[in-house]
Image (cartoon, rainbow, N blue to C red; front, side):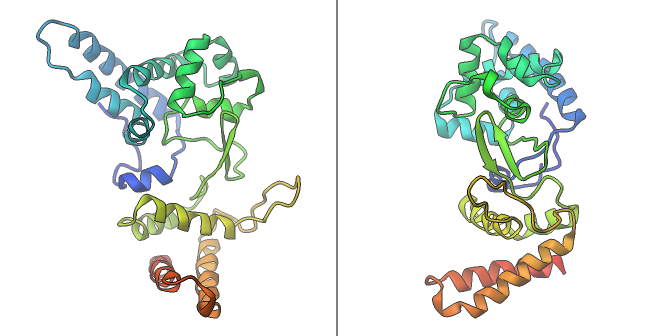
Amino acid sequence: MSIATVHDSLTLSQRLTCRQTPDAGFFEAYAAAYAEYADAAAADAAPGAAPAAGRLLADLLGAVHTELSQRRGVGQEDQAAYADILNRAYGEGGMLDPVGFLKSLTPAELAVVQRNHCLADPIDPAGLSREGAYNLLLPEGWRADFNQDDIVEVGAARTIQFPPSDAPPEFLDAWFAATRDMGEMDIATYGLVMFSAMHTVPIGDQPLKRTLPPEAIDSYRQIVANHLDMIERLRGQLAEGQYERDKEFFGRLQALLS
């Protein structure tokens, strides 16, 4: 059993560049999927059994977590230990107090979480915000942005998020259609262009602020139109090939948003 998501139809490149926000159904589905995985893991230990737990573990943690684990060299044993930690967090009320739950883990268990999220430094739960702790207890591919500032804390790290968690469905449909045949780096590059156009440039200690309402489809139409105008004005100053690439992508996105 895999956890059903609204992004099941996306390509892996799209999933790697777009994080989902879990709802209450996510945790219920995870518990059911974990029970199936645990039964398979127990059955795999029987003499002559055909291993099934590995496939179910990949379904349980999801395509993004599985892909990133492979890239990072995180083995199946660490992934299984992490899946168990998540099952305990979801079943024992750990997501209501994620900092407290992380404090309850042993140093070895915190190291499992650290490796699964590819963190450079050991986890110090006392130094984490609720958002940072909460996101450590979600598999890669899932994120919560509690204050909806489009800066997502994962442990002590801060990462940008695009599309925003409160983007309208019609924009998401257009974005995913426009990026469907693109690679991960190209999607991330254009996502950064869109993100930058929606926010102020922070100076000094000033926080990043939204300049356009992310829930309004016209915000995205305005960004796309402005970018197309800009590349026309600056065509002679752009790097070789950039005008053609941007014209093609933003033109396609503009048509999808019309």
